[in-house]
Structure formats: C-alpha cells, structure tokens
Image (cartoon, rainbow, N blue to C red; front, side, top):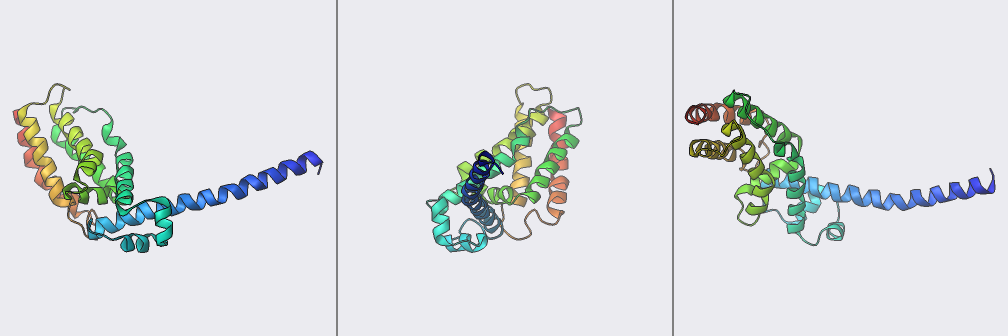
Length: 209
C-alpha cells in the first residue's frame, strides 16, 4: 500500500467513525417517533413522557436530546403523517364512477394507515383540542380535499351537495378512526364499515351534483 493509499484509507475510517453517531441518532429519533405514534394510536393523546420513552426503548435523556418536550414529539409524528399523505395531494378528478373512485381513495388511505403508525396516531388527534389544528391540516384536510375533488367531477367549483357529501364521508371516517385502541385500522372491518356506510351517501351526492 502506498502512502497515498494509506492516507486515503485512514481518511475513510475517520469518516466512517464520524457517521456512526449520526446513524445512531437518526435511529433513536425514528424510534421515538414510531413509538410515540404507536402509543398514541393505541392509548390516545394523554400519554406521558415515560410512556413515550418506554415505547421507543430509549432513555429520557435521549428523548430530550432530540426533542425539547412531549409536544415536540407529537408534532414530529404529525409531520411524518403529513409526508405519508403526499399521495392525497396529487390532483385527481373522477373517471365518471364517483362512488367507486371515492371508495378507492378511501381504500388507499386505509392501506397507508395500516402501514404507518403516524397516520393512525394523527387520525386519533383529529379530535384532540390541543393537536386538532395541526393533525387536521396534516391528514384530514388533504383527504377531505381529495374526496371533494372526486365528487366535483370536472374540476369545477364544488356544489353545496358535493360539499355536504364530502363532509358526511369524513364524519364516517372520523367515527371509525379517531378512537384510540389496538384494533384501530387493524382488522379490515374498519374499512368494510366505512365502505358500507359511505356507499349510500356517495350515491346520493353523485346523483345531486
């Protein structure tokens, strides 16, 4: 090995060692967010700092290294949920089968919610006075807008009937998703319930648009 090669190898080792703490920090932060999301989804927003650190498997010092407070952790969960909902922000119009289009959208949302704890937790927070505004802006509002876009059909200004139908659909979704518990979004029956209840609402809304 030449002197140049040796120096290059030493530099790579230094950079590798420098990256290790960064990776550990990223893993710890991710564990805190996932643990908090899972705890909120299953137990509600009244969780404590101790609940969060136990769920993440970290120390209280580690939590406060990454987040200044419990509120900051919860808002990180909401921020992650917003990123997971990017698919809702894609412009969409109905293909002419409004009921099927909207229910397909709801199916996509529930599929994502089963995959990501942050979405389940944020739905629970839709009705929490402290976090409601942020939680609804992150996931409720994009879902409502997507439902409304499909009900409007041709991209025009939504009619009062389509707004009423969209609000009714979201009330049904809220009724299924905002109660904390280990079964939330869990067994498929929740989506079946939403599809069964939204069918007549959507059919009526599509007929009057």
